[in-house]
Image 1 (cartoon, helix red, strand yellow):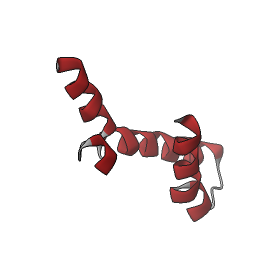
Image 2 (cartoon, rainbow, N blue to C red):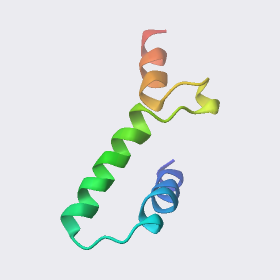
Image 3 (cartoon, rainbow, N blue to C red):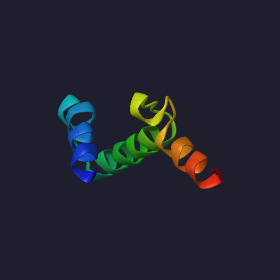
Length: 60
């Protein structure tokens, strides 16, 4: 799971931009993680975001 996440992070964020400052990179990674968990819909998760899927599983 972690390898998949880091592959997406590198392909969708890191390789797409040049970062001048470490702080910029850190902020972009934090924004990406928030988007990845809260807004990115996954077909394999029944069309839910990872957090929605986890919460759905906890309530079931």
